[in-house]
Length: 509
Ligand code: SF4
Image (cartoon, rainbow, N blue to C red; front, top):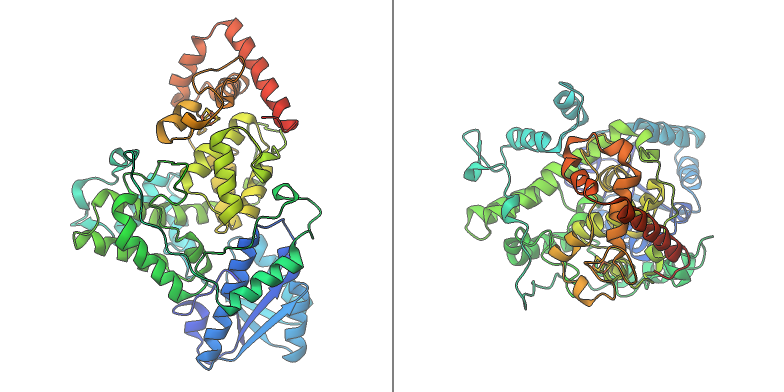
């Protein structure tokens, strides 16, 4: 038997590596995987560097490791079974049954067999989640989160939430005062292993995609900043809890042009690769609260991200695929504007956020939801296209993360857990950011020269989707404002929305 670790399962302290200490380990580095999408170079560097470091650490501990570099997974598996005929691989269960069937076929075709074991990168097991939602078959994140708080006992006291409330969102929507600067997040200097990967990624993949992503000007692989080892990931966790967690909560929804990280944890890459486990990051944050080093609103907001949202999305994805991947209940059919790749737009908010993604493969969750996805929603981008863009461009993106977040939460593709579309005009962007003050578009204008594109697109979105959305009781207030618009205003809005789409298609927005 051999433990087969796929690249997003770099876990030593639990899972099959820990449970089968006498068995060798197989890792396969597949070039064809890296060519599936025009991935951000930092995403490829992160994945392959973390895999190679993991290999080296296991070997340093005396564990036999076969590190198979191959053109395809098929080739990598064939080479393994040629060297070890009739071997059985043990690997963590993928997120969906169809992915499991694909892996079984791949291994069978290569001449071996595969056994699946639980994915221990998460706290809630599939059966636990299925039991939880069997009562009415609906997914409500807030209910799930409370269920997980009770199940784990995190931030609970005698059966009640610590502090008396389940969440402190009302304290977590502030914008920072002028002159506020968060603590700089740690940057991890590439060592020789990472530098080799940077060079290999650059020479192997730049210019190799049929498309010309990032405007044909591939995002710069240098400087690369993400943790690629468990030791670095733990340092990142320590740094966050000590230096940024106290201010994470109040400013978690705010956006500043000059502060790409704000006080966010930046731990998603390490969690999603298995370098950190969810329990340890939650427990570190709670310990900071109990020691008086971080306020409850910050700690609870962070715990909700990891214990609630991350676990919830994983199971919704598991249960709703493959339909969720193609879901498009609003019939949105616009092509993704080119500026998502090259940042070439006068809209200050979109230009800045896309530039952040081009530079680091990252932007924080409100920029993802309320700038990038919100614009896609009101513009009418086909959900699968935006999902693909997120998956290619973000260092922490895996299908189980992006599909529910983008297709459902961002673009209201299916209505399986989102109770309404997260559509907003410039009003929200202006309230939560400093973008509008430096933007050539007028945030208060809806139509006419220089009017902010978010405004006409917002009203046009409500207008053109009225048949589907008006009956949603959570949309009542929005439609009461639509009802206050005259026919003449609505005609001008529709014309402006068409003009915006034409400008975007011409690269002139
Ligand atoms: Fe974005 Fe409109 Fe504000 Fe410009 S005015 S930054 S386009 S929301």
